[in-house]
Length: 224
Ligand SMILES: [Mg+2]
Image (cartoon, rainbow, N blue to C red; front, side):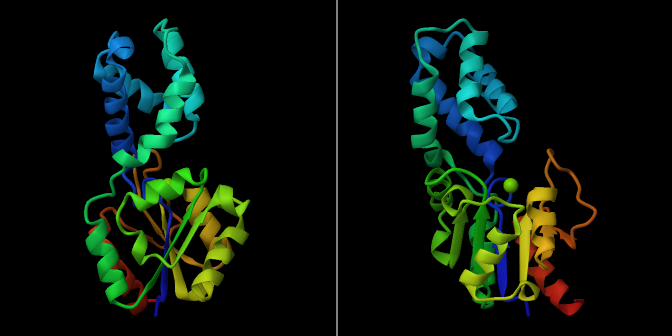
């Protein structure tokens, strides 16, 4: 039996692109007097493009947007502080998240989360998804001092759940950090494709909608 299911957060459970867009639109409205020289859609799309799936940290994203538009009456520090404080207010999970979590725990499976990112920022974002109560282990890389794909962070999560790697599956969207990382400690993997990483041929299974996950796990158990 698959006793534990471990998840990545960003773009696996959390619709980060959609959440970023909602946050950026709200921030544009807050600073309408200054940012209003850009249309809201221009601001949102530039913010998301510069973020590049989290590759560029927000201090640089804001610096560039302000510089590109000749804005000097508002500091990037103000915008960054708001992002750190308020992004979680705009975080939403992918469709079917709560039902999927309920189904897995109802089947007696343990749930865990391993996310690369800053602490407590990522923890606040996770709690905003409304399913944290169902998770028995939550690891944020900054708090752990190690990041995926380092095997120790996967092993630490398995230890907290009290299961071995052969009894656990990892679900994630990053082929190297999530899929290769989990496979290196002996876990089976389920890939969540998106436009940044559309495929991952070495994952054991693919999950395009969260509602499919319970059936995918039962299929993996039937054909180990
Ligand atoms: Mg991710």
